[in-house]
Length: 98
Image (cartoon, rainbow, N blue to C red; front, side):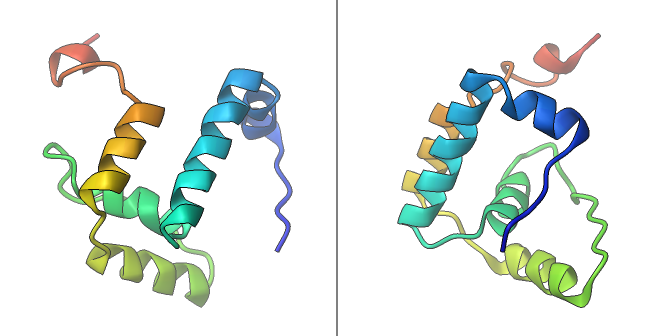
């Protein structure tokens, strides 16, 4: 279905560089038959410093999606593609220190 985007998300998507990254993300996941939200949660669970992502489902469908993400295993190809699209700020904890 279609989603409306507003606020900071709309502002971010107005930036062509951000829009290109989001499109690359969606294209990568479509190639592997993955849902964007589920893949994002599954990716978070692969990060060494993340012990448990916080989710805020508003509907039973969103809760079911979050639960599917827990059992989703992302392939090495998908993980490498995500690292290429979103390289991150650098190693932790140094890159995340104030």
